[in-house]
Length: 346
Image 1 (cartoon, rainbow, N blue to C red):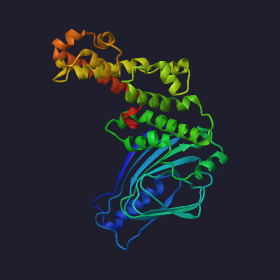
Image 2 (tube, helix red, strand yellow):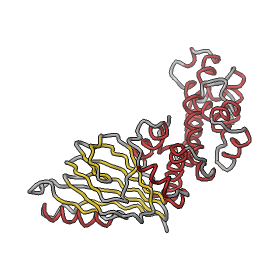
Image 3 (cartoon, rainbow, N blue to C red):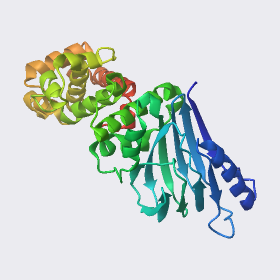
């Protein structure tokens, strides 16, 4: 199945009551477990304008919804094959009934959604939620493990959720999403696989974890590139893997880990050299601020990265700026390959 991205808006030319019926019909067919929507107000506001975006592939789907006042309910679906993770980005006075228990849901809450039992929710205007559905078979998740996950409360404070899940769900839509759609499913499946592995304390398939691991390492490099001790040994120790495994993880990437780190440092050094008052700053200070141990390493990195000597870069500002743009573009491509846009720059 080819990845498909679809957007939904209520047709503005409809009357208010027709808008609600249009939204109800669409919503009821947009998810695997049909939901029945009902009004929570006697009259539908003329400004009634819910909207949604859905993305689906063979064993993955995602739906982002901006809801108007509504009450929803669903019947039990014990045969559901999906693991559903929901991020309630904005949830003003929302209540959910899950497995017979009614409870409030706060903005920022992240939890797994149980549709094996009947349930529902009541929400005023302003509910904004993003739901990720991943095939349980692709995660090799049995019924007992699935049940354990469904019983977990709010996961928003979990490090993987705060550092990866929430940023990814906040940034998944952007201007290049149509072109990048084929890779989005693998990115999110990798995130969910990593989270499930952590929550259940069980090992996960290394292939499934690869995209999330690469992203975690790239994010760590971007946050710590000024650390002179940062290198393959320290990164491998930080992520509890061998040097061999670390290099294997990046061997098919456009910028391997070492090249990515050198490019970050060279880009930062060149940016600092182009600052208005850079001529009054000692090279040694710029080297340290960019993560280089000394001026010689800085000069070598700039030469290797741009093909120009430091003197040439300083004498020809336009060439230097073009070189900086090239370095930044290389990092941008690498970030796109690793889906860094979905997690922020770190």
